[in-house]
Length: 523
Image 1 (cartoon, rainbow, N blue to C red):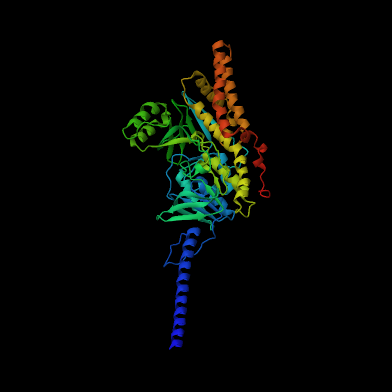
Image 2 (image 1 turned 45 degrees about the vertical axis):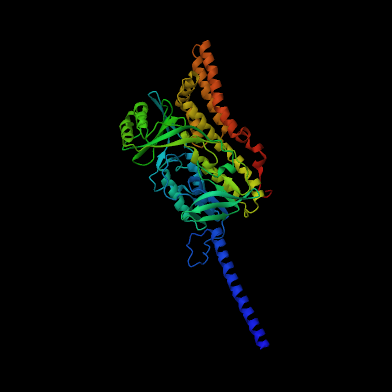
């Protein structure tokens, strides 16, 4: 009886042990499934509690945002063989009123990235230069395209269509995954960014990990505060309308009206639509709800619109389909952070008057691609961070040239009660009207074809000297000489603070910066 009891006890113990092992195995298997789903973030639904199959290995790079910068970067890194996860808040076609004019320099970067087909099939319009209007006079400024590839021109289009084309291209690359979700925070451990936390479209909280996280979530970025010093300024706002069934005075040219109190931009974004951007200085605009904005546009702005466009402008105002956005500027002031990098408008902004934002973003992507190509392994976060400090230096000449020109031109083009500033504005228009190098030089800077900051300074002060010369000839007077001195002082006060914010050494002599010589071998 005792032996039977002992045998029964042993059997019972063995059964309990087996049951315990089975339950433990199932629990571990369930945890393993949950962890795998969290890290790989596969888009296939979970069925009957089983693990999702990985469509690709864990990402090398997470990109936050799929606008112009994020989508182009995803395509570029994906084609280089990187496993890329892109998280975008809203994958529907965006409806924006800027990012609609790609300068020739930006289109050259698009060609370099192999993304030139993204402007096909969206009714994009070719742009060959600018037309400048002031006090009833006008002048045409052509892009210096003579020695370039025949396809290189400016391109204007609906921003949302362009972005959707790049997203579609990214989806065709097998190692690029686009997911809709809102990134809530960066995942940091001991000062190193390991990935991101985000909420999916269905409300699920997920943590994604990668050796490198690139933040390009636009001008409203909620992640940049830990990665840079965001000194955002809002000098003005744009009020946007679409004019239909009318023709610009200079076909295939962007139009800049030196209006009172600030510039008005006009350019074609499709075969039937012209974008009109009315600049309103300051952070506040007249109310659209109570009709103040419509009254402002009809009484103050409409009389300054070219006669060919007046009726279409009034019709657009009466239809009430107006949009407004703040024009932001923010110099690049990064905090080098292991495991993370900023790019696009989340990192650097300038006044959109010159349409340089996409050119800077695409140029930055070319620089970053070339820096990452030699690196097979991105897992050493500290070494990678030291190496990628060169990105911030190499990008400076082109980015700072476009940034400085945008800020300086906006200040010069705005009307002012100050007589010296008024003289500077008139001198600028007349200098550009001279033709030759006086027009091709500044337009080459504006279009991203000449990334030389010294050329910018030369032409800017040439305008000032030209203005002084007009004041002193043919017969100088003490009053006019003093006005000339004030004009030079005014020019200095406009451009030097912008240059200081951009960084004098990085802008004019990037080769003397130690980070310029970072090498993947010494990283």
